[in-house]
Amino acid sequence: MTSHSSLQALSKDLAGELIEPSQPSFDQPATAFYDEFNKRVPRAVARVADATDVARVIGFARETGLALAVRAGGHSALGHSSIGDGLLLDLSALRDVEVDLDGRTAWAGGGVLAGDYTKVTAEHGLVTGFGDTPTVGVSGLTLGGGVGFLHRKLGMTIDSLLAAEIVTADGEVRLIDSENDPDLFWAIRGGGGNFGVVTRLKFRLHPIDAVVGGMMILPATPGLVAEFVTASQEATDDLSVVAGVALAPPLPFLPEEVHGKLIVMGFMVHAGDADTAERELGRFRSLATPLVDAVEPMRYPAIYDDGEAPHPTAMSVRSVFSDALTVEDAGSAIDALTSSTADMSVLQIRVLGGAVARVSEDATAFGHRDRAMILNVAAAYEDAGRRPEHEAWVGDLSRRLAGGKPGAYLNFLGDDSPDAVRAAFHPETWERLVEVKTKYDQDNVFSSNHNIPPRN
Image 1 (cartoon, rainbow, N blue to C red):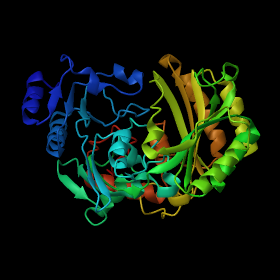
Image 2 (image 1 turned 180 degrees about the vertical axis):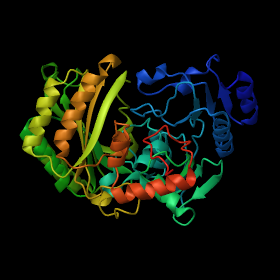
Image 3 (image 1 turned 135 degrees about the horizontal axis):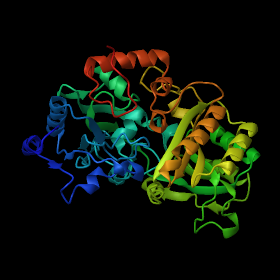
């Protein structure tokens, strides 16, 4: 058992701070987005100040045999950014964003949140495309791929990643890019947190300022959902849509008679010219009279202004790739949503194509660029004891929508089994990732993730 004295010795070596459960400041950095994981109490939280601190924490974990988890934004649906009776490496102090206007690039610390980064860069009319939630850590999101409000125009987040500072299992601080440790740089773009702790990321910035964006809510029927998807696919690459099909919650901006009825809630960003935006967004408005239409001209950061939903106790989630969403598929999803016993259930649809599909399959560790869309099935609930029931519901609907084809988006992978993780990658990609893992983390120090085990 790791002694208090050994933890104190580590604390003296850190430029940051080591926080133990008895200290008043312990709760904040140990908090996960999903409340069920807050029952896990780490032996200590190492709130690191720089890459040197990270190397010391990794070395300490290896010497003592303590399990190690890494936290940036804390949004892991499987609790990978929390740990019980182990060491939690907290990146939240690494929040600097350094903008190079001449080079149109930005360095972001490993603990930077998507919304904060976007506010900084957007002051200069420049952005990087991240996800759809402002409090997600950009490092975790990037390692899994990154799909959000600009992916059809700019590609995935990893397609804008130019370099990274990473601390590997041997404690070495490496600056990697397409020329320096190119195999490692390839692997972190879609292979998750298996290969080290990313402490800084260098992103390409894109000149986007004014967009037409916001939320549009329509009544959901199988035919409308299918047409909504078709409209998203047939739009120009300037339009990216994140849509959710669900029973309408009692939101104050929805008419009371709509509460509990099926809706499509689309979050849209059109980053093209105003005339094209009006024409393409008008197609969605023509599908049915919108229940809410808050799509309007705005500066890009405003798309994050609505914040995020309250933190649920638990979440069951599965993702699949699909080549089409037919009326029959939409009908199956709607039947399932109306029968779910979770507090909130949703089918989230992210149409791909555009810039995502123009990058070759082997350029990064993220595969499935040729697929039409990501379908994310999720159930949120307060009673974690009913997880098996909700897991079964999520699993059944996601299998039906997958149509027997393998593949999953790592950032939404809700199954930690070896077969599920392996199925998220093409076979040749998996073998290459195993080789990189074996080279840089033979002892599987970084295992609190969607784990890719090293070759024995």
